[in-house]
Each structure stands twice: as structure tokens, then as C-alpha cells.
Length: 458
Image (cartoon, rainbow, N blue to C red):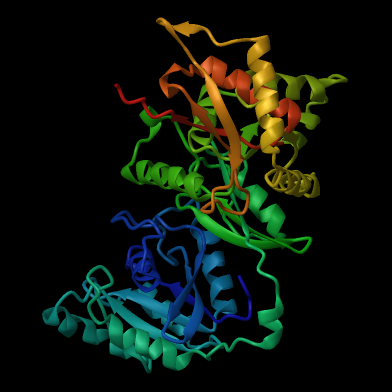
């Protein structure tokens, strides 16, 4: 996102409703909202517009209460970074809990912040709660707003103050001349603790998301905009997907659902595999989600540095990559890259692969060539009968889906006698024939069949 656009940081102790306020202002559910304290650990950012004002909105992890001792220091650091970068700070407190020592300490720190601060007394669901919330006046904040983020109460006054405080960003001629380069949305998915957040941080060159050896550190899907060699990308760091039977909290189940939605909205998926463990059954299940969503992909075998520390025998890298390919045999078109996300190795090569896939997505097979290709293939190896009927291809053409993203998936329409006669094995055979002519590197091939209309009798 453009760093010149004003940034609003939402800060406060855990479980005061920061994520609910974030979602209310953003007008969509982005942050996970849950009664359990400490759910949001990373900074989550989105672009918002209110009237003529555009701003970036950032949700932060809760500060100051040791609800999750493994991450308290890192969450506080994340929030401090957000406060230093913000044009406006929303300090959120719990109107039903009343004033706490943590709130008092946060207000003391924020009074020294360079940006203006608005005190948001959340969970003021009705007028009787406002009486309790009056004690927050002693924090000495000039602007105090009593709201209920969950129900939308009091939000109009808060939004009015936000737009009156922030500067208006006017479009310049220079900005209008910039060619529209649609950012490539890259979803990084995999099991917990395979290095997804480490990869995002290595790409960004800073500690953008929290990294820990503890599985399940990332609970929300985090969108991180980056520029690499003049190309715009949005890195989507997702929660680690554990087997359904091992998802021991409702938060983890919800995170898994969010990850699946991230796959759907991504242009390309990076499947991260732990090089120490090799391909596991859960990795195969995760790869099936990419296949079902018909998404381009890159497979990363991570933790190269840890393997090298063990001084493996000569030729181990080739053997490891071949083993990964053998275990993910249903991904023959997907490139495999070994790297160390922690060390930031091979990142330029990763983006070269992504650009190569993007270039391949623009390939087209001429309609005449396509039909000759498929006709010759069917003459060499005809389809088997299904009952007393046989599949017949009447005509084929490649089409472009206008709704496709930055990396459109090649799509072919087959006009056939009866689409139910095309079995999966023969569909794969025809796909392999197309790939021999155009590899469509890293891309799935989408084949849609349309049956010939039945002839009228008489």
C-alpha cells in the first residue's frame, strides 16, 4: 500500500474489542473476533475510505496483559512500531471492565506519541454503560468516544472525528500516469511452523509478522503489500493448517476456514513443505485444496539451512527434490524450489518463477492448432466406450475468463456429444497433449465441456 496514505493504528490491551472495531470501520470481517484474549498477534492492515478520505487501518495485538506469555513481548513490539508509524491512534478500552492499570499506563505512553490520539470506550452497548465509562475521563484525553463496535452504536461521531483529523490525499497528475499494475495476490499456505511468516518477513526485509517456534503463532490471514523489481504483490500469510482432528480450539477451526478463503481469492499459492519432515499426509491434503480451487502454485521446500547443518551426503538436494516431486505426483506442472526462509535465500529466484508463471498464463493455443492437436491425439488413443456410447469431441477452443485475476488460468471449452462420457483419465490425457504444445508452466488447465443439444424427433 502507498506509504503516503495516512495510517490509523488501533491499540489497546487484549480483548477490549480492537478487532471488532477494525472490522466495523473496514465494513467487512477481516480480523478474527473471539472472546478469548490475545487472538490478534500480528499487525493486520487494510485500505479504507470514508467520504473523500482514504486511509490505511491497522489492527494490532493486545499490549500489556500477560494473557499469552510466549508472545507478550513481541506483540508489544508490534504495537509500538504501529504507534510510531501512525498518523492517528485509536486507544481502545473496555467500557464494561472500567479503567485498569494497563489502560492508565498505555494512555501515559500515548500522550507522548507524535500522532493525535482518540480514546474509544468500547462495549458501551446502551446509556447505562456510559455512566461506568465516565471514569475514563481521568486519562486526560481530549477526544473520548463511547461506542459499541459489535452493534455499531456511536460509530458516526467517531468516524466524523477521524475524517476531520486526517489530511485529505488528493490525486496528483503523476499518480494518475502510473500504469495500473494489478498486484499479484500470493497465498502462503502449509502446516503450522513450516516457515510461512519467516518467508513474508524475509521478502519484506523487516519483522512484519511474528515468528516463533511455537506452532499456531499466526491465527489471522495477514495481507502484506510489497514491491519486488517494480512489480506489485500482496503476500497473504495464512494460519497453519493442521489436520481437522487436531484443531483443538474454535479459533483454530475458524483460522482454517479463513485460510481456505484466502486460497480462493489468491492469484497463486505457495505451498511450503518442511524439508526436515518431507511431504506429509497433511501436506497432500493441503495441496488438494489448491487443486480444487484451480490455482497456479509453487512448492517451496523450506529450512534448507537446518538440513545443511547436518552435513548431508553429496547429491542430497537432488534426491530430496525428486522425493518431493514423487510424493506430490499430482502436481507435475508445478515448480519446486528449495530455500531457507529464515536466511532469506533464493527469494529472487522465487519471484522469477512467479513472473514466469504469470507470463505462461498469457499463452494461447490457436483454435485451428488446438483442434488438429486433439484430433490427432484421439486418433492415436481413442476413448473407451462407456456402456454402448463413446466420447466424441466436436470442437475445442481456448477462452479467457474476464473475471480472472492477475494470473488467469488457461481455460478450454470442449463442445462434445455428451460430457458425462469424458472420464477423468481421458481428461488428463487430453490435458497432457495440450501441455506438450504449451507447457502452461505452474498453471492448472481448466477444461469445461458443453454437450451438444439433443436432436428433435420427427
